[in-house]
Amino acid sequence: MTRLLSKGQADLLRLLAQMPLLDRLEMAALAGRSRGGVYESAARLEDAGLIDSVPHGTPLLAPTRRYYVTEQGVKALAVTEVQPVGWLLREYPLSLRWRRTLLERLDAAAVIYRLASALAGLGHSVGFRWRRALPQDATLTLSDGRVLAIIRQGATAERAGFAKRLWRLAQGPRPGAVLVMVPDEVRLRQAVVLLRDARTRTAPVPAFFALERHVAVAGSGDAIWRSSAGVTLSLAEAVGRANPGGMTAAEPPLVRVSIPKDIDLGGGGENVPDHLLPVLLRPAEKRALDLLADWPGLTREDLAGILDASKPRASQLTAALERLGLVTAFQLDARRLALTDRGLKLLARPDRVSTGEARQRWSVGADGGGDNGAAGDRPSVSGRRSRQLLRDLEHTAAVHRFVAALNRQARGLGWTVEQLDPPHRASRYFRHYGRPRSLHPDAFGTLRRNDLLSPFFLEYERRAVRPATMAQRLAPYLRYYSSHRPADDHGHRPLVLVVFDDPVAPTHFLEVARREMLRVRVPLPLLASHRELVEREGPLGPAWLAPGGDFQPVEPLHHYE
Image (tube, rainbow, N blue to C red):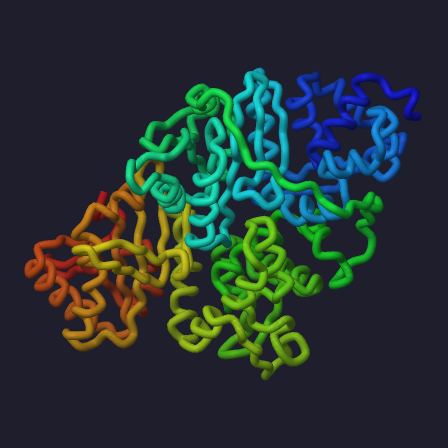
């Protein structure tokens, strides 16, 4: 078969060696060929056993099939290139180690491939290289010699770890430009600050930032990229601002390489190798995993609310994840769900997060304790953050009920929940009169309806019943809102929603808040309510009291429009 390869087939085989696990639309864009021609060449290569495919889909990308060079294909390419197989395995990401790495990172790699395809759509010939140990995820070299570094922040990546990657990028050889993908608006604004030089307050190279969900679906002409100066640009305009040339650090080649066997998707359950899970899981199952990573200890009912699905559907999804050993159920006050160590590893790998650190923070035991969560079992909680959440279970459960009810009600009222952050991502760090300060709300969210954006912090208070304690709870917010940081972090001044258990507490709290705001001369967009009223009217209903008025319930989002 190797003697019968046409030029188009040989070029396609070489492209898949350089960029394994492309789908056919991406192949067409990167090869600069028609879809029909690529589909025909791919079919012939597949019939000859030189390439094969695996299914893949994510919450951001529609299901597709992604192609890789088989063991026979590697040998055929070596003949075509007139090179030893060992040379190919070191030159291209074809070895067993690279195969496993790319499969583990496939959800992230798929979006990066979409970005590379969009660049090719601008008429650029793209030289692409994956990076294994450098701070950037990949490097693109355009036909005019400009070098673009791509760096992605995953949803599970901590701010400190990502800051270190950006610092390492700035300290090394400078590319012509940096394209940064982030999961949400808050982290986009944080990334802009993190990449700035501390002395010049500017990025060391032209840097452009975009939300990952926009990169996944946008074309080269869509204005989704933002410069470090805040200017909104299309991909074509961003690339036009890149510096000429550019460099990137060299990675040492792998010392030991071997040809991987062809992928076998047979079998199931916990016997599935970890690196094959990204191609076996469906987008809805991945979405459920993401939510359980954000909100450990959810009940199935609350998971259904955040998923905007029925409880039977949520049960179906979690049952499939339990069979794969990714999720465990355990009995506390109710049947609760959390990721196993295997589930934590699955989410950490594509985000380039240490699995050891993820377990230290979030582990509830490999199987939840006992016989995988039978009645009466309690999890063996070793993760410090999971332990903290489950220690104050009544508080955690109340926050879960609030965010689930918010998501259910928002759709019916025409709102879109754009962002819903758990406590560990809702925290804000800032300086006040030269001292480091922090804000630790129970959740942060952003709602959108048409052009109206409404961000909010949530505080669920059970113990702040005395005026002095209430004033202590308000102090971090007064410090934060006394500066420009709320607008810098979110583009708007978020509402501060405070929910009490006691029906009388909101009125007393707002009176304390009024006095404190007058004392320090800092206005807060503050609303308060109590649990029973919020549960009856819903988080978006007329369940809130505002300071300085007659303390009648108001609808918060309408009130502040």
